[in-house]
View 1 (spheres, one colour):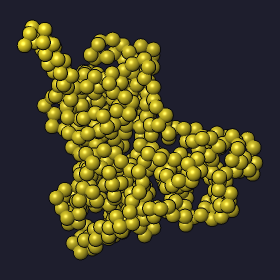
View 2 (cartoon, helix red, strand yellow; view 1 turned 90 degrees about the horizontal axis):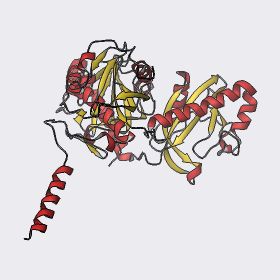
View 3 (spheres, helix red, strand yellow; view 1 turned 180 degrees about the vertical axis):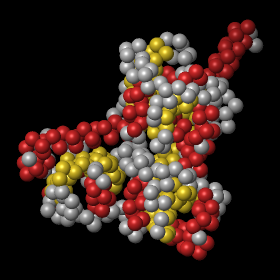
View 4 (cartoon, helix red, strand yellow; view 1 turned 180 degrees about the horizontal axis):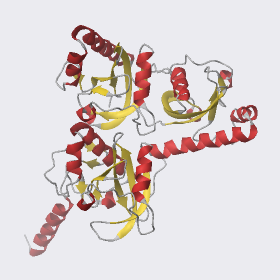
Length: 448
């Protein structure tokens, strides 16, 4: 081999080693999109906003699996599994006290609500307020620990439970939030409904409903339209389905057995919020697609809402699997009756127990929303989860408990899938009452 070939070969070998990521001693594994959480050192410049969301979700699930103390210890390590140069996790409680920061250990135990960026912006206060809403983004200026330069930074914040929240961020002057993130969709729907509510306030219910029913009106866009109903479930506005106007759809059920009519009335009675279902998309030849909707009551005679179809969310659950899901929950309820509450909860919490199939495991709550059993997220057990919100803003535990008290039922929500490396995915849950203060349930994820 001549000298030139040797030089080229050595150069190619060098390039290869430079391209191979350097791994830490982490034992955390799991694929999340394009990033592999195996302790790999990543450059922040290669991380998208979607990657950032998944990174924070991964850290949240880690806390739910390992418990708060273990998670905070890991988040605080500069060589830990969640610190990769300028991509890292930090954590605070809702009083503003820092719980973990790998690059600022001196923050630990101190209240940092007064911390400002160079423009005077109180970023920790803003993040804390965003965490109250479940999750969201905050822009500010901050020093990059790798470069030492103050740069624009976009943080993604997520509530873990009633006591604390965590976040991570990416640097760069051109970073923006895509419109297809759950938070963007959530904010869009809230904003669209707010415009409808403002119109009702200005013009009255009758004129507003007439305009909502106009398929060419200002409240119809390529993404969504405004619908309306009253507190009995009677449809008042549905611009692309005029045959439903005046009909009571309280008993309407979607293709997977979710009681659309009952669920939206329950959400409305709770003051409004988000709910999910499979519904026809008039902008896609009436194809049945997964849909996220937000509703807000105006009065007993008018509840206004808007939704968005998410065709990329797979929401097909076979009848066979749904029947098996009901059977699993009923067997769990029978186990409670036969062996007692304490023995049943022990069995449900055992990851090797008879009810702990990763693809369909049993969980349990009391009527106040305290989680009593989850074999794969033991860090959550014993905590009230009533105020939990999933990525699009739904309160799953409220609906799961309500369904059980109505005699049993299905509902959709997004949750970590232990059979899919704990990725947050759509889940179809079913719950029933096992005894007066014990709700048992299980769920299935779409087949991958």
